[in-house]
Length: 105
Image (tube, rainbow, N blue to C red; front, side, top):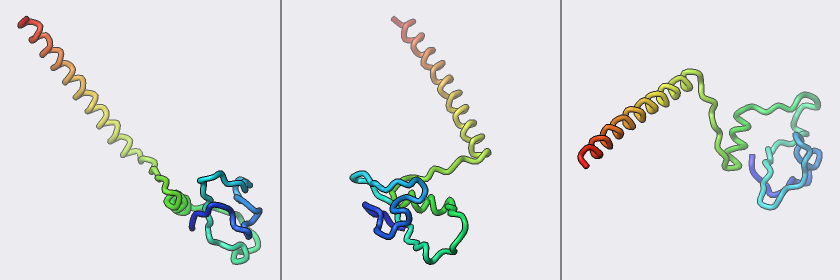
């Protein structure tokens, strides 16, 4: 895979086989998969594996965000709840300190 500023002359359909787009805005890049249809079987479906998507993102300099698993979500929820409790305790302590300061004036 590599990026290019325009579609090569021998591009199937002259542009993106997924969207049909062929114009590339200034500064944008297309992803050339470096695969020639002549080397593929004459029939079959075009499919894209998640690894290919990750590779495309890497070529473009974009970030892949993994979907958190159920146990990770539960862990994150516990952390958020712990932090919420800590904030409430700190706010209560701050209120006590303010009352003490006000009582001395």
